[in-house]
Image 1 (cartoon, protein in one colour):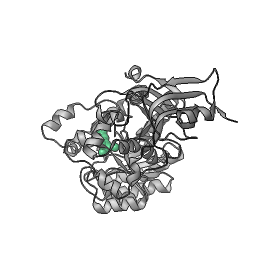
Image 2 (cartoon, helix red, strand yellow):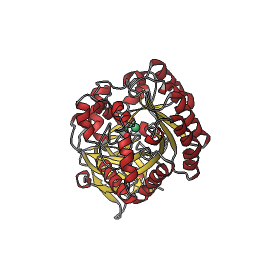
Image 3 (cartoon, rainbow, N blue to C red):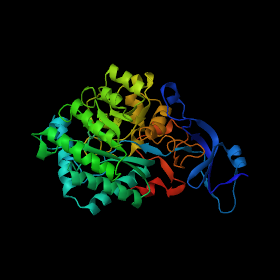
Length: 424
Ligand SMILES: N=CN[C@@H](CCC(=O)O)C(=O)O
Ligand SMILES: [Zn+2]
Protein backbone atom coordinates (compact mmCIF):
# COMPACT_ATOMS: atom_id res chain seq x y z
CA UNK A 1 0.00 0.00 0.00
CA UNK A 2 1.15 3.53 -0.79
CA UNK A 3 2.21 5.62 2.20
CA UNK A 4 0.11 8.53 3.36
CA UNK A 5 1.64 12.00 2.85
CA UNK A 6 0.91 14.67 5.46
CA UNK A 7 2.60 17.34 3.37
CA UNK A 8 3.38 17.65 -0.33
CA UNK A 9 5.54 20.42 -1.80
CA UNK A 10 4.70 20.53 -5.49
CA UNK A 11 5.29 22.67 -8.58
CA UNK A 12 9.00 22.82 -7.74
CA UNK A 13 10.94 24.39 -10.63
CA UNK A 14 14.26 22.85 -9.62
CA UNK A 15 14.73 20.41 -6.76
CA UNK A 16 18.33 20.04 -5.53
CA UNK A 17 18.29 16.81 -3.52
CA UNK A 18 22.04 16.63 -2.70
CA UNK A 19 21.35 12.87 -2.51
CA UNK A 20 23.99 10.15 -2.58
CA UNK A 21 25.96 10.60 0.63
CA UNK A 22 29.05 12.61 1.49
CA UNK A 23 30.47 14.34 -1.60
CA UNK A 24 34.13 14.27 -2.69
CA UNK A 25 35.99 15.32 -5.85
CA UNK A 26 33.84 15.65 -8.96
CA UNK A 27 30.78 14.38 -7.09
CA UNK A 28 30.67 17.75 -5.37
CA UNK A 29 29.38 19.13 -8.69
CA UNK A 30 26.33 16.86 -8.46
CA UNK A 31 23.56 18.52 -6.46
CA UNK A 32 21.00 15.93 -7.61
CA UNK A 33 18.94 18.39 -9.69
CA UNK A 34 15.42 17.39 -10.77
CA UNK A 35 13.21 19.74 -12.79
CA UNK A 36 9.42 19.78 -12.33
CA UNK A 37 9.58 18.01 -9.00
CA UNK A 38 7.67 17.36 -5.79
CA UNK A 39 8.53 16.22 -2.28
CA UNK A 40 6.18 14.24 -0.02
CA UNK A 41 6.61 14.20 3.75
CA UNK A 42 5.21 12.18 6.62
CA UNK A 43 6.11 11.92 10.31
CA UNK A 44 8.80 14.56 9.84
CA UNK A 45 10.59 12.46 7.21
CA UNK A 46 10.84 12.44 3.43
CA UNK A 47 8.49 9.85 1.91
CA UNK A 48 9.29 10.50 -1.73
CA UNK A 49 11.14 13.09 -3.81
CA UNK A 50 11.60 13.42 -7.56
CA UNK A 51 9.63 14.16 -10.72
CA UNK A 52 6.17 15.42 -9.69
CA UNK A 53 4.14 12.72 -11.46
CA UNK A 54 6.26 9.95 -9.89
CA UNK A 55 5.90 11.40 -6.39
CA UNK A 56 2.14 11.85 -6.78
CA UNK A 57 1.85 8.25 -7.97
CA UNK A 58 3.90 6.95 -5.08
CA UNK A 59 1.97 8.46 -2.16
CA UNK A 60 -1.60 8.69 -0.90
CA UNK A 61 -3.17 12.05 -0.02
CA UNK A 62 -6.57 13.13 1.34
CA UNK A 63 -8.34 16.24 2.58
CA UNK A 64 -5.99 16.51 5.56
CA UNK A 65 -2.83 16.57 3.43
CA UNK A 66 -1.25 20.02 3.29
CA UNK A 67 -0.04 21.15 -0.13
CA UNK A 68 2.55 23.87 -0.67
CA UNK A 69 2.80 25.29 -4.18
CA UNK A 70 6.47 26.16 -4.76
CA UNK A 71 5.41 28.24 -7.80
CA UNK A 72 8.32 27.05 -9.94
CA UNK A 73 11.00 27.97 -7.40
CA UNK A 74 14.15 26.23 -6.25
CA UNK A 75 13.90 23.78 -3.32
CA UNK A 76 16.97 22.51 -1.45
CA UNK A 77 17.75 20.73 1.81
CA UNK A 78 17.82 22.97 4.88
CA UNK A 79 21.29 24.43 5.36
CA UNK A 80 23.52 22.75 7.95
CA UNK A 81 25.78 25.27 9.68
CA UNK A 82 28.42 22.96 11.10
CA UNK A 83 30.66 25.56 12.82
CA UNK A 84 29.31 28.38 15.00
CA UNK A 85 30.01 30.16 18.27
CA UNK A 86 26.45 31.44 18.68
CA UNK A 87 26.16 31.20 22.48
CA UNK A 88 27.74 34.30 23.96
CA UNK A 89 26.84 37.67 25.40
CA UNK A 90 27.39 41.00 23.72
CA UNK A 91 29.14 42.08 20.56
CA UNK A 92 32.54 43.48 19.50
CA UNK A 93 31.86 46.16 16.91
CA UNK A 94 34.68 48.30 18.43
CA UNK A 95 37.22 45.81 17.02
CA UNK A 96 36.32 46.78 13.47
CA UNK A 97 37.89 50.21 13.96
CA UNK A 98 40.93 48.71 15.72
CA UNK A 99 41.34 46.42 12.73
CA UNK A 100 41.19 49.40 10.37
CA UNK A 101 43.91 51.02 12.50
CA UNK A 102 46.15 48.02 11.80
CA UNK A 103 45.74 45.70 14.82
CA UNK A 104 45.54 42.01 13.96
CA UNK A 105 43.04 39.51 15.40
CA UNK A 106 45.76 37.78 17.44
CA UNK A 107 47.17 41.10 18.71
CA UNK A 108 43.73 42.09 19.99
CA UNK A 109 43.44 38.69 21.72
CA UNK A 110 46.93 38.92 23.24
CA UNK A 111 46.00 42.34 24.70
CA UNK A 112 43.04 40.77 26.54
CA UNK A 113 40.45 41.72 23.93
CA UNK A 114 38.84 39.53 21.27
CA UNK A 115 37.64 36.18 22.61
CA UNK A 116 38.67 37.20 26.13
CA UNK A 117 36.43 40.25 26.15
CA UNK A 118 33.47 38.07 25.10
CA UNK A 119 34.45 35.68 27.91
CA UNK A 120 34.21 38.53 30.46
CA UNK A 121 30.83 39.58 29.12
CA UNK A 122 29.46 36.03 28.92
CA UNK A 123 30.55 35.21 32.47
CA UNK A 124 28.70 38.32 33.71
CA UNK A 125 25.49 37.47 31.81
CA UNK A 126 22.63 35.61 33.47
CA UNK A 127 21.14 32.47 31.93
CA UNK A 128 17.96 34.17 30.76
CA UNK A 129 19.86 36.91 28.95
CA UNK A 130 22.15 34.41 27.23
CA UNK A 131 19.17 32.31 26.17
CA UNK A 132 17.29 35.31 24.86
CA UNK A 133 20.24 36.61 22.82
CA UNK A 134 21.05 33.18 21.40
CA UNK A 135 17.41 32.47 20.50
CA UNK A 136 17.35 35.68 18.53
CA UNK A 137 20.47 34.61 16.61
CA UNK A 138 19.00 31.17 15.93
CA UNK A 139 15.75 32.72 14.68
CA UNK A 140 17.81 34.78 12.23
CA UNK A 141 19.71 31.70 11.07
CA UNK A 142 16.43 29.83 10.52
CA UNK A 143 14.91 32.74 8.64
CA UNK A 144 17.90 32.52 6.29
CA UNK A 145 17.40 28.80 5.63
CA UNK A 146 19.61 27.18 8.28
CA UNK A 147 17.80 24.26 9.92
CA UNK A 148 20.70 22.66 11.85
CA UNK A 149 23.39 24.50 13.81
CA UNK A 150 26.46 23.27 15.62
CA UNK A 151 27.12 25.44 18.69
CA UNK A 152 30.44 25.50 20.51
CA UNK A 153 31.02 26.49 24.10
CA UNK A 154 34.26 28.42 24.62
CA UNK A 155 33.29 31.76 26.14
CA UNK A 156 33.23 30.38 29.69
CA UNK A 157 36.77 28.98 30.08
CA UNK A 158 36.21 27.70 33.63
CA UNK A 159 34.72 24.38 34.68
CA UNK A 160 31.39 25.81 35.82
CA UNK A 161 31.06 28.35 32.99
CA UNK A 162 31.80 25.80 30.26
CA UNK A 163 29.27 23.38 31.75
CA UNK A 164 26.74 26.21 32.06
CA UNK A 165 27.13 27.07 28.36
CA UNK A 166 26.55 23.48 27.25
CA UNK A 167 23.59 23.07 29.61
CA UNK A 168 22.10 26.21 28.06
CA UNK A 169 22.53 24.72 24.58
CA UNK A 170 20.57 21.70 25.82
CA UNK A 171 17.82 24.02 27.08
CA UNK A 172 17.80 25.95 23.82
CA UNK A 173 17.18 22.70 21.98
CA UNK A 174 13.91 22.34 23.88
CA UNK A 175 12.84 25.94 23.43
CA UNK A 176 13.22 26.69 19.71
CA UNK A 177 13.01 24.70 16.42
CA UNK A 178 16.56 24.79 14.99
CA UNK A 179 18.32 21.45 15.58
CA UNK A 180 21.45 21.99 17.67
CA UNK A 181 24.65 19.96 17.85
CA UNK A 182 26.78 20.82 20.91
CA UNK A 183 30.58 20.96 20.80
CA UNK A 184 32.84 21.46 23.81
CA UNK A 185 35.48 24.13 23.15
CA UNK A 186 37.06 24.67 26.55
CA UNK A 187 40.32 25.18 24.65
CA UNK A 188 39.14 28.28 22.79
CA UNK A 189 41.69 30.56 24.50
CA UNK A 190 43.83 30.57 27.64
CA UNK A 191 41.77 32.55 30.20
CA UNK A 192 43.32 35.58 31.87
CA UNK A 193 43.68 33.81 35.23
CA UNK A 194 45.96 31.18 33.61
CA UNK A 195 47.87 33.45 31.24
CA UNK A 196 51.22 32.73 32.89
CA UNK A 197 50.68 28.99 33.17
CA UNK A 198 48.85 27.78 30.04
CA UNK A 199 49.79 24.14 30.66
CA UNK A 200 47.88 24.23 33.94
CA UNK A 201 44.84 25.38 31.97
CA UNK A 202 45.33 22.45 29.58
CA UNK A 203 45.38 20.18 32.67
CA UNK A 204 42.08 21.69 33.79
CA UNK A 205 40.51 21.10 30.37
CA UNK A 206 41.77 17.49 30.20
CA UNK A 207 41.35 16.39 33.80
CA UNK A 208 38.22 18.24 34.92
CA UNK A 209 36.22 19.76 32.09
CA UNK A 210 36.27 16.88 29.60
CA UNK A 211 35.31 14.16 32.12
CA UNK A 212 32.41 16.27 33.40
CA UNK A 213 31.17 17.20 29.91
CA UNK A 214 31.25 13.53 28.96
CA UNK A 215 29.60 12.35 32.20
CA UNK A 216 26.68 14.76 31.71
CA UNK A 217 26.57 13.93 27.97
CA UNK A 218 26.66 17.64 27.19
CA UNK A 219 28.57 17.49 23.90
CA UNK A 220 29.30 15.15 21.00
CA UNK A 221 32.54 16.81 19.92
CA UNK A 222 35.68 18.22 21.51
CA UNK A 223 37.32 21.13 19.70
CA UNK A 224 40.51 23.15 20.18
CA UNK A 225 41.86 26.43 18.74
CA UNK A 226 45.27 25.15 17.59
CA UNK A 227 47.14 28.28 16.60
CA UNK A 228 50.40 30.06 17.28
CA UNK A 229 49.87 32.09 20.46
CA UNK A 230 46.79 30.09 21.50
CA UNK A 231 47.22 26.28 21.89
CA UNK A 232 50.26 24.51 20.44
CA UNK A 233 50.06 21.29 18.44
CA UNK A 234 51.28 19.33 21.49
CA UNK A 235 48.73 20.91 23.82
CA UNK A 236 46.00 20.39 21.22
CA UNK A 237 46.96 16.73 20.82
CA UNK A 238 46.66 16.21 24.59
CA UNK A 239 43.24 17.86 24.69
CA UNK A 240 41.88 15.92 21.71
CA UNK A 241 43.20 12.62 23.04
CA UNK A 242 41.68 13.30 26.46
CA UNK A 243 38.35 13.87 24.70
CA UNK A 244 38.70 10.64 22.73
CA UNK A 245 39.31 8.75 25.97
CA UNK A 246 35.91 10.04 27.14
CA UNK A 247 34.05 9.37 23.90
CA UNK A 248 34.15 12.92 22.50
CA UNK A 249 35.00 13.03 18.79
CA UNK A 250 37.74 15.51 17.83
CA UNK A 251 37.30 18.68 15.82
CA UNK A 252 40.00 21.27 15.40
CA UNK A 253 40.43 24.96 14.47
CA UNK A 254 43.45 24.38 12.25
CA UNK A 255 45.90 26.52 10.26
CA UNK A 256 43.73 29.64 10.42
CA UNK A 257 46.23 32.50 10.84
CA UNK A 258 49.37 30.51 9.99
CA UNK A 259 50.30 26.96 9.04
CA UNK A 260 51.02 25.16 12.30
CA UNK A 261 50.44 21.49 11.49
CA UNK A 262 46.81 21.56 12.63
CA UNK A 263 45.55 19.59 9.62
CA UNK A 264 48.19 16.90 10.17
CA UNK A 265 47.11 16.66 13.80
CA UNK A 266 43.45 16.39 12.74
CA UNK A 267 44.32 13.40 10.57
CA UNK A 268 46.51 11.83 13.27
CA UNK A 269 43.71 11.84 15.86
CA UNK A 270 40.99 10.89 13.33
CA UNK A 271 39.13 14.20 13.68
CA UNK A 272 35.68 14.35 12.14
CA UNK A 273 36.57 17.80 10.79
CA UNK A 274 39.43 20.27 10.46
CA UNK A 275 38.14 23.82 10.24
CA UNK A 276 39.45 27.09 8.70
CA UNK A 277 42.57 25.72 6.88
CA UNK A 278 43.56 29.03 5.26
CA UNK A 279 47.21 28.03 5.57
CA UNK A 280 46.98 24.23 5.30
CA UNK A 281 50.13 22.63 3.85
CA UNK A 282 50.15 20.21 0.88
CA UNK A 283 51.12 17.50 3.39
CA UNK A 284 48.15 18.49 5.56
CA UNK A 285 45.81 18.22 2.56
CA UNK A 286 47.08 14.71 1.76
CA UNK A 287 46.71 13.69 5.40
CA UNK A 288 43.10 14.93 5.56
CA UNK A 289 42.23 13.02 2.38
CA UNK A 290 43.74 9.81 3.73
CA UNK A 291 41.98 10.18 7.08
CA UNK A 292 38.56 11.01 5.56
CA UNK A 293 38.41 14.17 7.69
CA UNK A 294 35.95 16.81 6.45
CA UNK A 295 37.51 20.21 5.68
CA UNK A 296 35.15 22.86 7.03
CA UNK A 297 35.86 26.11 5.21
CA UNK A 298 34.72 29.42 6.70
CA UNK A 299 34.85 32.01 3.92
CA UNK A 300 32.98 34.60 6.00
CA UNK A 301 35.86 34.65 8.49
CA UNK A 302 38.50 34.89 5.78
CA UNK A 303 36.52 37.77 4.27
CA UNK A 304 36.15 39.51 7.63
CA UNK A 305 39.81 39.05 8.60
CA UNK A 306 40.42 40.95 5.36
CA UNK A 307 43.87 39.50 4.73
CA UNK A 308 42.87 38.58 1.20
CA UNK A 309 43.79 34.96 1.97
CA UNK A 310 41.25 32.11 1.54
CA UNK A 311 41.44 28.37 2.10
CA UNK A 312 42.63 26.38 -0.94
CA UNK A 313 39.24 24.84 -1.64
CA UNK A 314 40.09 23.58 -5.12
CA UNK A 315 43.24 21.81 -3.96
CA UNK A 316 41.27 20.17 -1.14
CA UNK A 317 38.54 18.98 -3.54
CA UNK A 318 41.08 17.74 -6.07
CA UNK A 319 42.81 15.76 -3.34
CA UNK A 320 39.49 14.05 -2.48
CA UNK A 321 38.83 15.80 0.83
CA UNK A 322 35.09 16.28 1.49
CA UNK A 323 34.60 20.04 1.77
CA UNK A 324 31.91 21.70 3.90
CA UNK A 325 31.21 25.42 4.20
CA UNK A 326 29.96 26.95 7.46
CA UNK A 327 29.42 30.45 8.86
CA UNK A 328 31.72 30.44 11.93
CA UNK A 329 29.11 32.86 13.33
CA UNK A 330 30.87 34.58 16.24
CA UNK A 331 31.10 38.09 17.68
CA UNK A 332 34.67 38.75 16.54
CA UNK A 333 35.82 37.26 13.26
CA UNK A 334 32.46 36.60 11.58
CA UNK A 335 29.46 38.41 12.99
CA UNK A 336 26.65 36.90 10.89
CA UNK A 337 24.13 34.14 11.50
CA UNK A 338 23.22 33.91 7.81
CA UNK A 339 25.08 31.03 6.19
CA UNK A 340 23.06 31.86 3.09
CA UNK A 341 24.91 35.18 2.81
CA UNK A 342 28.18 33.28 2.24
CA UNK A 343 26.92 31.43 -0.85
CA UNK A 344 28.25 34.22 -3.06
CA UNK A 345 31.49 34.59 -1.04
CA UNK A 346 32.18 30.85 -1.34
CA UNK A 347 31.76 31.03 -5.11
CA UNK A 348 33.83 34.16 -5.69
CA UNK A 349 36.66 33.59 -3.21
CA UNK A 350 36.83 29.82 -2.70
CA UNK A 351 36.15 29.46 -6.44
CA UNK A 352 33.45 26.87 -5.81
CA UNK A 353 30.61 26.26 -8.27
CA UNK A 354 27.04 26.74 -6.97
CA UNK A 355 26.44 22.96 -6.80
CA UNK A 356 29.66 22.53 -4.81
CA UNK A 357 28.61 25.24 -2.38
CA UNK A 358 25.18 23.70 -1.87
CA UNK A 359 26.66 20.25 -1.18
CA UNK A 360 29.18 21.91 1.14
CA UNK A 361 26.42 23.71 3.08
CA UNK A 362 24.10 20.67 3.34
CA UNK A 363 25.19 17.05 3.11
CA UNK A 364 28.89 17.69 3.72
CA UNK A 365 28.03 20.02 6.62
CA UNK A 366 26.01 17.13 8.05
CA UNK A 367 29.05 14.85 7.53
CA UNK A 368 31.16 17.26 9.59
CA UNK A 369 28.68 16.57 12.41
CA UNK A 370 28.53 12.81 11.84
CA UNK A 371 24.90 13.22 10.70
CA UNK A 372 25.05 12.68 6.93
CA UNK A 373 22.91 9.54 7.21
CA UNK A 374 20.03 11.59 8.64
CA UNK A 375 20.34 15.20 7.49
CA UNK A 376 21.51 17.35 4.61
CA UNK A 377 19.81 15.73 1.62
CA UNK A 378 16.29 15.12 0.33
CA UNK A 379 15.98 11.34 0.15
CA UNK A 380 13.32 8.92 1.41
CA UNK A 381 13.75 8.20 5.12
CA UNK A 382 15.74 11.32 5.91
CA UNK A 383 14.50 14.15 8.06
CA UNK A 384 12.32 16.56 6.09
CA UNK A 385 14.32 19.79 6.32
CA UNK A 386 13.58 21.88 3.24
CA UNK A 387 14.04 25.41 2.00
CA UNK A 388 11.88 26.96 -0.70
CA UNK A 389 13.85 29.81 -2.26
CA UNK A 390 12.76 32.94 -4.03
CA UNK A 391 15.01 31.76 -6.85
CA UNK A 392 14.38 30.04 -10.20
CA UNK A 393 17.53 27.88 -10.22
CA UNK A 394 20.63 26.94 -8.20
CA UNK A 395 22.82 29.62 -9.78
CA UNK A 396 20.54 32.32 -8.42
CA UNK A 397 21.38 32.24 -4.66
CA UNK A 398 25.05 32.21 -5.66
CA UNK A 399 24.52 35.37 -7.67
CA UNK A 400 21.94 37.57 -5.90
CA UNK A 401 23.71 38.47 -2.68
CA UNK A 402 23.06 40.56 0.41
CA UNK A 403 19.31 39.90 0.69
CA UNK A 404 17.34 37.03 2.18
CA UNK A 405 16.07 34.79 -0.64
CA UNK A 406 14.19 32.33 1.58
CA UNK A 407 10.44 32.02 0.90
CA UNK A 408 9.70 29.21 3.34
CA UNK A 409 11.49 26.81 5.65
CA UNK A 410 10.29 23.34 6.65
CA UNK A 411 12.02 21.75 9.64
CA UNK A 412 11.37 18.07 10.39
CA UNK A 413 8.15 18.33 8.37
CA UNK A 414 6.90 21.44 10.22
CA UNK A 415 6.21 24.59 8.22
CA UNK A 416 8.17 27.37 9.89
CA UNK A 417 6.88 30.40 8.00
CA UNK A 418 8.05 32.95 5.54
CA UNK A 419 11.68 34.00 5.99
CA UNK A 420 10.89 37.70 6.02
CA UNK A 421 8.54 37.30 8.97
CA UNK A 422 11.10 35.48 11.07
CA UNK A 423 13.84 38.12 10.89
CA UNK A 424 14.03 39.92 14.21
N1 LIG B 1 39.36 31.12 15.82
C1 LIG B 1 38.85 31.04 16.92
N2 LIG B 1 37.56 31.16 17.22
C2 LIG B 1 36.60 31.82 16.42
C3 LIG B 1 36.55 33.27 16.71
C4 LIG B 1 35.87 33.53 17.99
C5 LIG B 1 35.88 34.96 18.42
O1 LIG B 1 36.65 35.78 17.88
O2 LIG B 1 35.12 35.26 19.36
C6 LIG B 1 36.80 31.45 14.98
O3 LIG B 1 36.62 30.27 14.66
O4 LIG B 1 37.09 32.30 14.13
ZN1 LIG C 1 35.41 28.80 15.24
